[in-house]
Image (cartoon, rainbow, N blue to C red):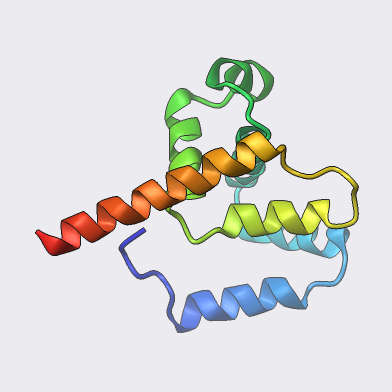
Amino acid sequence: MSEKIENKLTEQLCKAILSLKTTQEVSHFLEDVCTISEYRALAQRFEVARLLDEGIKYEDIVARTGASTATISRVKRCLVYGQDGYLTALANLKEGQSESRPPRMQRKVQFEKERAELKRQVQDYD
């Protein structure tokens, strides 16, 4: 996550996605922009993030999604050390629903984020 990826082109892409108004428009855009396997990989990663957010174990996520443990680990790393993109999207989807993240999972994610921040501070100090 330390590599800066934002630039004029990525900003343009984000604005294009934001301009789309329906699920169908987004789907058509992604089908045009991505290969079928890239589109499916994005969907799979988001499902992995959703399941991790619910506290589901790696083995169960592998069984449900077919994702590799490497993919699950990568998504988990983004949930903890990332820019909160997954968490924001998940929260936005849940907004209209009564369901929310279980309190135990909220504490776990918060603890992991605090631990990651402390590690960063220690590394910066060294």
